Length: 103
Image (cartoon, rainbow, N blue to C red):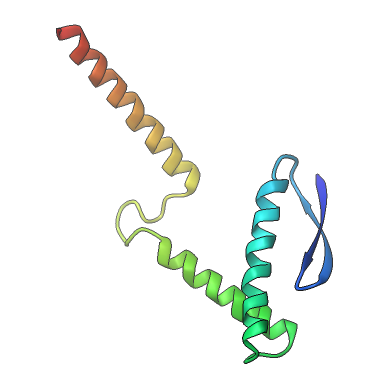
């Protein structure tokens, strides 16, 4: 495990993450800090806990809005999507190789 020291809205935090995932965690922190700072700077909501909840709801809405529509593929994990794409590449490579053999 690796530890990362970050600041969110000026507050220091020490976060743990898996080795090699520091960059992704730092990007997530930067994104969250931006969202929370924008809410704070708008001046309509006071209190870090309320700002955090509003930011979390906004991020959750973004995530849910980016999901594929309901259907047979909507419940796939990212790993499953990557496996499906890899399988599609294999099928395409085989089809193209067969085409090249004809010429």
